[in-house]
Length: 248
Image (tube, rainbow, N blue to C red):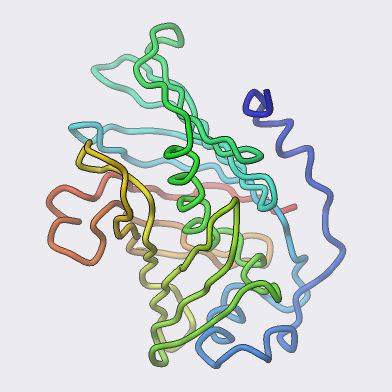
């Protein structure tokens, strides 16, 4: 099955682009979108189609637990997020993935005992929303002709595009330099444990770094019910810092 594709196999499937970023390529977009893209991508940077990230942080599984993880995003095919979490001193290892139209979550305690296994159309649809939000780690994909930009004002903009069978709307808030402050999108999910539905999902950017010509969020807090009081009280479940990033 396609979903059995390994982490390295997905990364090695990428053919590097020979195109590079030049500011005139985004001249057709409104000023806020140009400001964001020109801040995020240095002139002459390869327009990557994939990114590999090493990160660490905390994830909330009833309580906050430390994790380390590695992730590959290959825009045309999907992503694999492989992580290790420690609970009561014991390791839980597994992955979330969306590869070639199939989403899945598989996690095991001590590498043996399943603690979470999920797949199917709802998981796939939710994963498509996740990869849309993580486009800010691969901003080259937001330069394409298939992305439509609109702006409510000089600091609030929206990118609309299709990916992995979904039409996705990514809302960004930027400062006067083009630096990202928040990310938000309607994402398919069931944070209350009931039926799946669209829920506001987003992240607060707390720091950025430059890797290989890309200036991206390097420290953030993310979760459901973004933009409401419920984000702080029950929605936030992911806090991450990037350690190493490679583009291809």
